[in-house]
Length: 222
Length: 222
DNA sequence: CTATTCCTTACGGAAACCCGTAAGCGAAAT
DNA sequence: ATTTCGCTTACGGGTTTCCGTAAGGAATAG
Image: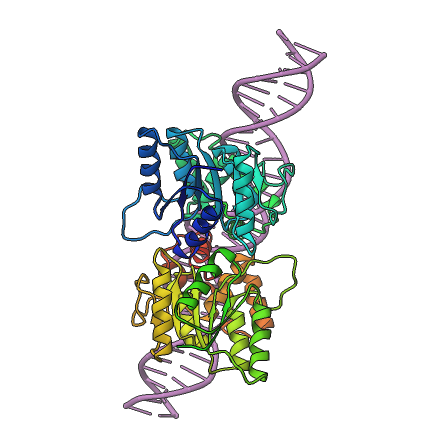
């Protein structure tokens, strides 16, 4: 079993249960942090001391509070960790259940397992830890219904997300076009952006931009 | 201390900690349900058997799964419970931290305490349970910054919510007007609705309808 | 080299929005 | 009874979205 595991989870009500699972699995060293920044520091230090972690279990969303934070989400933490210790195994334990988000965790951030917080997630988490230890790939807790084969949301790319983000911030077409020119994002003609928004509206069966953004919010795309 | 407490919480990772708190407080009877419907049934039965619950601790959002559910949220559970056993004390334990939502729980549903899931929520929860037992009123966990005095969100009423809901569903002004006429909601002229939306845009500092709905989603108003 | 295709961009008219102004109307005040 | 006030509704013009058509340009195929 893993020898040294770090848990990044801000909610104390949840971390208690996660730590308990690791104790049940006889993990000798279990560390726990409530902030992403703290997590990165611990991982860096452990690597420098030649006592690196075997496994990171992290949540995705962390609450903001008085403390200033540079890493504000599990995504950001993993991205930073990948630069420091790319071989570290990573399990995400989060409430998120949107296939688009989860797929990108596997594809873009190279996580080893995803466990969705739910009614039986403790067992699921335990299984995921064991499977990860046995070098299985792309482990998904069983209550998630989608498979990696369905292409349903895969074609929504970062370009679309950028448009949706700006729209949701109150930008009008022309402003989005200007912003894209500034950021050298292409295509950036108002007409092209308009067409892309139209595709998104068809895809999500949205009547208009307002509806589209409401749906995008529901899907966790923005 | 309370003699009989019901916990309604779907996430097993959290309910473990909540039950543990109650055990620490020497509560003799602790029941736990993962579905709202189940919770209502238990409360009804206990009341009929003349062994009613003293306290309900419930989450707000519950995950949907294969099971058909009539009560799908903590709000709905509390509303139903209030009809069966109005004197039951109620603590809400949820991640929600929007003042509008929380105020309406106290004002409309008559809950006794609200504890926000956070980095020290176990202690907060313990305190809230003790305070509730001592008949204190309107208990709020300390990480919530707003007070009941600030009027900031109080004036957003159900009329505004209705508008935002329909907007987020892709309705255009004229359709909203028709819908309001159907439902006998007044005022229902397109102009009045337009003016109200305008107020909301000023209030939330939104540039346009798209922006407004994005903000409303963030605030959990729709 | 030309033709085809795909993609980006431009244009234009209809619909919906945005926002100010003013008319209509009932309730309360004088 | 008249005035005032507050609220709802109507109207109009400027802006943005919506949606179809088409021009320009690069890449690929023949």
